[in-house]
Figure (tube, rainbow, N blue to C red):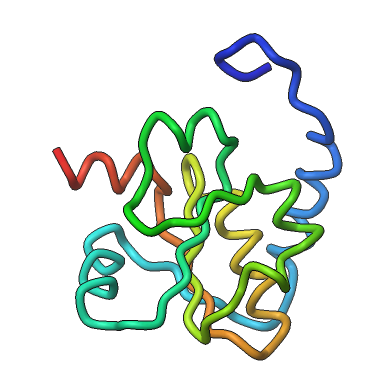
Length: 126
């Protein structure tokens, strides 16, 4: 259950996708929160995808990030990746990593994920 008391669905499927993504060969790059902020200052065409649920996104998110909860993203990721550079972020970096792997497998995008997810981003912003 999430912090609002609602049952999360498809957890077994999500964990399976994460495990499968970890075993894939095509690479994505893991970046620190400070590298991420530097990237957003120096590069123009970046898509930032926040894989958290809409409630957590509403409580605070990165400016310009697109909120696509992980389960939805994994089904419709092609529609979300409009730029060559895509950065994923989630709670702690686990779902973001699986999402970045999915993007990297396409071969059409350069994919990054933020190590430590929003927890690392928030800590850097304090």
